[in-house]
Structures are given as structure tokens and as C-alpha cells.
Amino acid sequence: MYTFQEIRGNKSLTEQLKAVVSEGKASHAYLFLGGAGAGKRLIANTFAKALQCEGERQKPCGSCRSCQSFDHKNHPDVIYFQALEKPPKYTIEDVRKQIVETVDLKPFQYEKKIYIIEKADTLNVQAQNALLKTLEEPPAHVMFLLLAERAEAFLPTILSRVVTMKIRPLSEETVAEYLMGTGLSVEESHTLAAYSQGRIGQALELMEDDVFREMRQDILGKLEALPSMNEGEAYLMAKELEAYKSDLRFLDIMELWYRDLLTAKSLREERYLIQKDKKEAIFRGANEPAEKLAKKAEAVRKARIRLSQNANFRLTLEVMLMDLKEN
Ligand SMILES: [Zn+2]
Image (tube, rainbow, N blue to C red; front, side, top):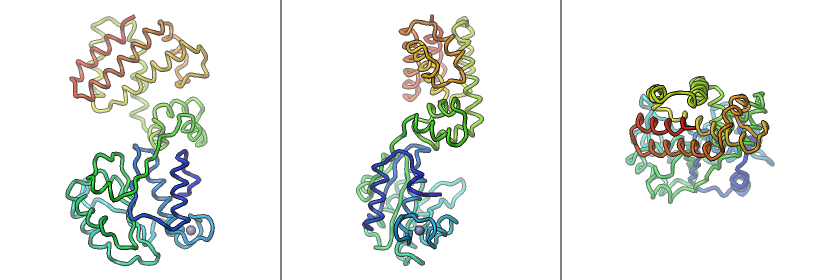
């Protein structure tokens, strides 16, 4: 529970944090940047726990008074910033009440008082400005750990006051190994790892996500049926896909499908496939020439780009499906 050993990959970042802990020379504010499910929470919490640990050798030790209260989620000097409004959305009042008005108070029991701000990139400009004043002249006993997905959302003045720590995505192999360690089958582990973009948290979320599983079955069924459809049926499919307009993960599913078809085509061996659970369908689909398959993969990529530029959804999909249908 929150130890440096639990952190996968990101070796140099982990070593850096350990050094900060052992040398006792922490900055006042750190920003942990990484995609959803990349491990921001694990890393920031482990760092906070280690900073507060009273153990002699390895920090966090897991057994001192500080570590125990941290693990019981009632550490007096680790403060989790919260949105008090409903639905949860940070306001300038949250910053005033929870940070500005409390920051000068001494820690209760330990040397440091650590504020953890998740989703810090959702603080609006006013809230960031309120926080900035504290970041500019922080009391000596205070530290801030900010967690965020996007650096662009911050005022440059905030970014200049924090030490930025980028959390890197892991290799698919590392994510798959992790998933197998949780008891998931080899096939499923590799499939989920491929969709996770190197983020264990993302993979774990997909594992529990029935909507995603159903979407995957639906999309793969459609892709397999597509080559034998007539134009009218393909247009109808574009209409059906409008159900996924707000969840573009269906494009990930499509891209991975063609990636596997190409793999099956060029390497002809099952062990290289990612979606091993679909191997029969993949080898059936891999009968086409490699250039055609590459073009289809390209059509999906193009559609993704067009949609990111706010192109018309239905029209974009119609164009894409016509390209995918072509033999
Ligand atoms: Zn400890």
C-alpha cells in the first residue's frame, strides 16, 4: 500500500523522488503530469507518505506512526484538497477556505504539512491565481503536490513555481505482465494492455468496464461483416455508429483490429497477435494484400484526425467505412 516498489516503470522519476526523501531537500511544490490511469495518485501519495515517514532506513517504512495513519487515511498533516460544490468542481472559495486560510497554521504533529491537489488542471484562472499567492511565498512547513493530465491548463506563473515530474507510459509488455499478475488470462492481459496506452490504471478500468467490452464486441462484429456488405448497408452502419459519437474509443478498437490484421499478414504467427481472443477472425481478415490493409488502417487514423478537428461525425464515418469496405 503506497510503496516505491509498487511503481512500475518510471525508474528515474522514482529514484529522483527517493533522493529528495533521503536528502530531506524537498521543493515546496511538485506537479505530477500524466494521462488518466498513468499512476499519478500512486506516485504522489507514495512520495507524501515517504516525506512524512519517521522510519530510520527505508521510507516509507509502513510501520511508524506516520505511515500507519497515512495508510488509515487519517494522517493529520496530509490534506486532500476537495471540491465542496456539487457536482464536484473547484472554485476560488475552495482554494481560499482549504488553502489560503489554513496554510499558515503549523502542522499538527509532523514537520511538514502536505497538500495534495488532484485534477489540479481543472482549477480555473481565478482559483489558480489564489493558489499562486501561496506558491510564491509558501510557509516553510508547507508542500504542495499537484496532479494533472495537461500542463497547458496552468498559468505559466504556476508552472514556474513547481517542479514538474512527467510520468511516462509503460510498454505494453509491462502492462500485460502486471495484468497477468492480477490473475487475468494471457489473452485478455495482452488485449487490454494494447488498449491501455501504457497506463495500468487505464487497463484496470477497462477490465471493469462493461460498456467498453460490449462496444468492442459490437465494433469487431461490424468490421468483420463490412467487406461483404453493399453500400447501402455500409451507410446504415455509419448511422448506427452515431451511438458512439461521444466515446471515440471505438476508433482505438478499429485501429487495433487493422494493426492485428497486418501483423497476421506479415508474420503469420498467432503469438504476435495482440487480440489473441479473436485470432480466427483475424486470420480470416488477413487474406487481403498488405497494402490494402495498410490503407484501411490509414483510413481510421484519418477519421480520428478529422473528428478531432470537429468534422461532421456521420460524414466522416461514411467516408471511412467506404474506404474500409473496399476490396
Ligand atoms: Zn514510516
